[in-house]
Length: 410
Ligand code: GLY
Image (cartoon, rainbow, N blue to C red; front, side):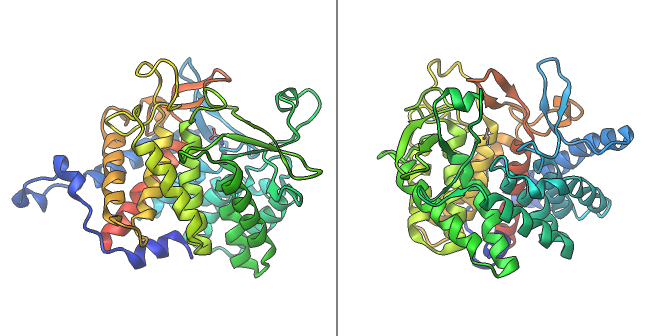
């Protein structure tokens, strides 16, 4: 079932207590737009400026981040981040009802057509599901179904029977993955790619995709987590006998640290697996990892995590707004499930969104490379994208706002 249906159907939401700070007096309420409406209006204007820039260029550009010198970086279809900008335009179309956005969302989505046959990395799930997946949901274009199913087939070529996982990165020649001595590395981020597989089974009736997704989720559940609920970034497996060869990190501070976006992918990914399978163990893990983050001594008061919860110079370490946005989106979904104190998850997500919607994280119009949110981190160990806007922060922020609004409508 699509999360939108879940959110539409299940929630009886009482959780707006966290909005107190922004809630106008009753007599003023009718006259003033809600703060989420203002956040949507701002995002429409800011992303609208980027759309104008793209359209004026005569090319089909796909913005991802900013260089230290302030230039917008655009990516090609094979980049793991290529689905987020089209996906954000779909969410804006849905949030605003602005029909002028639909042909643009279609154009930016269809520019990724070639990605459906990518087999050299695992990120095809992010790429295709965020773009074509949202397009299919909102535009019901039949041709998008074939792209989704073909992309799922491509992703499944990376499945290895013995470990029962989809390999994340190739390990070739002189690559940095080869230098780490890995054989079949799987990163926690890969949980996010499984949504494409679940969708493909629904679209095609072929249960192979579903089975691969469940096998991957089960092995990840077994190997990626520590007793405190936090997760490793990378688990490296033997293809020959399926055993674990290494437990390490690539983007975190240390092998044993808690890289924040990894925790966010785990919370979101296992929540999604619960939605798709009904298997409670996935939701239990998502909740456990969320509790780890929520109760961590280094979590800032505004609930936007440092890039790694164990980074050595906290509080003088960059925040990662992308992690906060991913967690908020997942929490809205969790708040619709049968969990104790379900409304508290929405309250918490509301508090995250209020932080992100504030001037501390939302950029002034026309600045920040025309991305909505500031202050995310790509990869500090690679000295790449530190305290910058990232298109996936914007994407999950808009998704979270959409989920919040769906819940409140009910
Ligand atoms: N999937 C890569 C990242 O989260 O940075």
